[in-house]
Image 1 (tube, rainbow, N blue to C red):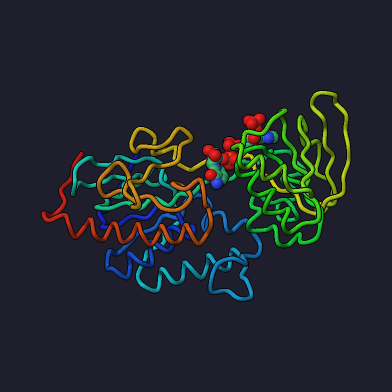
Image 2 (image 1 turned 90 degrees about the horizontal axis):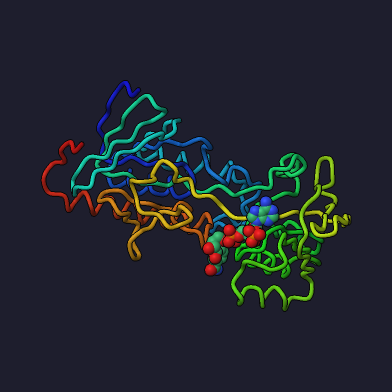
Length: 322
Ligand code: NDP
């Protein structure tokens, strides 16, 4: 049961690049934002090692350091960053209405605007060797980590558009890419399938699943199993990429906001506006296509600008709207 109630202008949910960028802009616009970090403060970038593709870091930067710096930048302008998790929401349908968000089942924050930046989580196979070697050669982001395997042999699991796109990306960098697809066909679009098929250093294995990723501290190999014949085969690899989909962190918004059939929040046109006035979505929670730190940051900026404009357009002081 909720115990206490607080009223604020702008509430930001999530602490990845989208959330922090929204916070920087919202704080500078004097919206006095309060951010709740969620379960994984810093978001997906805290699970990666080196970030080499965020503009402005010529030498690269490790993910956790970058997130600490983003937090410091947001706090410098007055963002209040709190550890906590949104556990329930009650969004108003009215322009100028007040949105209620329950934090950790114990406190209600009433906000004139809410910026959702709760991100998405990569799906993993959830086998012990994969979990053990995360950060030691197992990655769920080829664009983030592929470069570290330049000239080496790697494997990727998945048969959707992400896997096909990432396999093509890896094929440009790596010596050889073994692609494991559990069915006899790919789910990826025909165009992506064609691209994968046209690259000579991608070895596509249909009806093939991961039996075990080999290596103690770092990935050294892969044991695959043909799910039709049961035949096993070991190959040497140094990098293993998982590309079996993402799950947007939107469970608490079900029934409150419009989402697509895979749970991604729907935003209007080029804006970050959701189906409720004063509620905005940025970052991976509304983007299944680009999913980069820099694109998330870009939409975080947009969300803060949208929130600022929305507040300016709401003439009368907001009233409680239950
Ligand atoms: P998808 O859900 O489309 O594909 C997931 C793939 O992983 C499927 O091939 C699935 O196999 C496989 N898979 C799932 N679980 C396992 C498992 N446990 N073991 C082995 N394989 C597994 O996810 P994507 O991330 O590829 O795409 C998500 C959405 O984003 C799609 O709508 C896609 O079209 C879109 N997208 C578009 C892009 C673009 O337009 N440029 C780029 C990237 C994504 P199976 O088929 O057997 O279920």
